[in-house]
Image (cartoon, rainbow, N blue to C red; front, side, top):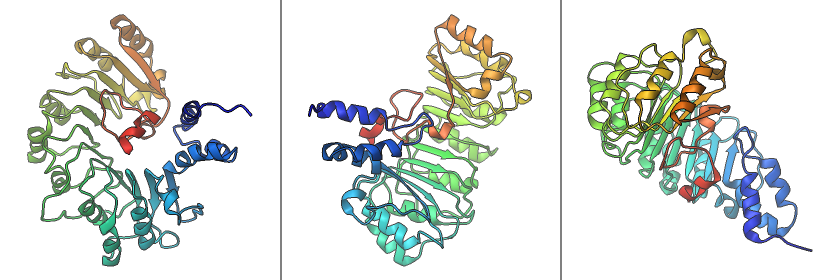
Length: 354
């Protein structure tokens, strides 16, 4: 029987890895595993590469170190009726080449000492996403104590618990917070990342000393800034940056925008489905003032704006690429270092996760 060269098979499998929705195409990868042994050898690592575990999960191979070694991204939920903290710890430690841990832990406030003893051998993960946590939970601090290698941190739930007295052992490349924590938490998380932070995503802002501290310590090094609403505080922050390559509006566009850095290469908007709340006028007006702009991105709701045709015209006139993204923002990116924005989800990023 004629066989394709191994290199071509790998390329084909990588092309079918993601669905159009941005999710991993597990069904196709499983089918490839069942074709023959040579295909299974290639498809099996891809099948386990991004693994999602829920309290009802029954995935074969979780007790097999060979399968656990394939996992680079692990999404897991600690639940009193399913995955216990002890099982969570054993699974994470078993994934010796884990890159990104996504943890939901709403049922606990802290990890017991017996669990922490297991986590002493946790892999040196580079990306950590925490969701569905109790507002007073200290699980974040407990995990970060054992993972000084973390460079990408995403907090999808509010964190108000008092941080440790000792400074963190990690230096962040990226911080994304969907529900703004208490200022003391934010300052602690970034206290050792003065020259390393490159990507910052925020929803709300504080006034006064906290914001001034962020500008003073991180503004000169940031390359990407994503925020919910443009206001005077955000404008002050942007004026304190000098090397921004990417700005993304996560919600309504302001009526006026001033002093955007001329270094911007990617200008993005994720317009909510409420046209009455925003207009593209100020967004379009800002485009000609950005001499380094290469690409403008928007989501599907933006295409319904009455000014969308004008946006197309301005981008064409200036030679700026316009892209419409139909996926939720958090499905479009891999948490990896970025050479050029916009960052995307792609099998080409696998090399950064090894």
